[in-house]
Length: 512
Ligand code: XMP
Image (cartoon, rainbow, N blue to C red):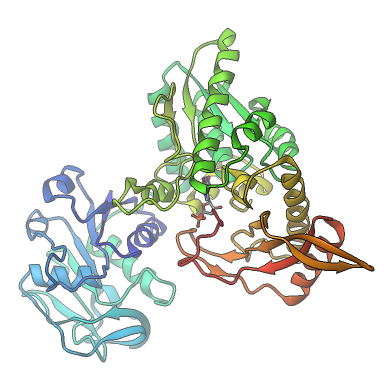
């Protein structure tokens, strides 16, 4: 793999995705990984990410020059660029010329491998206080900017290069090309990471793991579990049984979609378990978000265990398939030791006495890769293009205790919002739009001649590339108006519709 070393800013995952867009497999590793640990992975190249520190700050993460001595191609970005320079004998200084945001980069000479034939000056995204003022011995400086005398250098023979700007962000329009050139032309890596290769690779790993065994897979109706199941089905065929748990926290129409659309597309064995009472019972009186998540995670597993006992007659189901994605793994602390923000029910919320071995064929994939894998496996667009919906479902979209009546209310409001967003053709523009019921809040309204004392709902439309960060979507007023009018007319308990205009960070996408 290409290892992306995470120096603690938000950029490492994004870089890893961009590397994969260049059809090269990549993984994120924490900066605390030792040279030996990295070399043991036989890396095709190492990319040093940006980070919040100054290379001179006390306790700042550093880079071990032995990486370069070992002959591994290395690419430095921003902070990683400065570390690389410093490790190889270049000079990094606080020149006082900070740059933040859009900056003009000017090419020097022919621009070298990284920048050749790109516009002589072009915009790139910068975020730095210190600057490289002298490139290491043997490196050619190929780009410069107002605040960064050395904005890019390369040493083709030594297979080392770097840039001061952030090539991975959208605001660096040539960044992807520069990254691609490093990987393909300087590091000499052959592009191989394609959807077909992901499928082949995962199918053979699954066969190896499960052998002649049997697996069950919880289907949530979402993209991830649908694709995970389809991959496992391709690997072990009929020895997979899918279990769809109706926990009562589903949106309207979800059960039919799984029972009808998914089964007709895949022909998979499906068992539906009606566990509505069980979940509602377990959630009674609970208002704390983390407790809700833990309870839902626990009950899920209990239901699967029961399903497994019920399936005993057919054979031994020892494996449980889960649609855990790479960002879930990294966000739950599996990647970089970042703090746990929420217990995603399929990672942090597993009980300790789990009876199954987990099969997680999407554990190393990003969402866009999962969607492409789904299409490659022949799943219909209606399933693959679905917007994310959290495993704990509407349970974490009712602020307050979860009850059957409140679920009905939220389900009705949510169905209207989704209908109107789809009708307005906005499904692709928004990442998802949670509808949240503020069940413990009441406000006074008037309808006809009567006073009402109902609950508000919150619309939370967000745009995002990977759910790690998000911006609130500027929905057209007409669409907001239609949703508001319909919800307050058609859902008796709701008399107020509000809009959440918070980005992530600081707000998360879900309210709990
Ligand atoms: P947050 O609220 O953390 O959500 O900004 C990020 C994305 O993850 C989804 N989400 C979950 N998905 N199990 C899931 O499968 C969970 O427990 C869970 N919690 C949040 C959320 O909908 C958003 O897309």
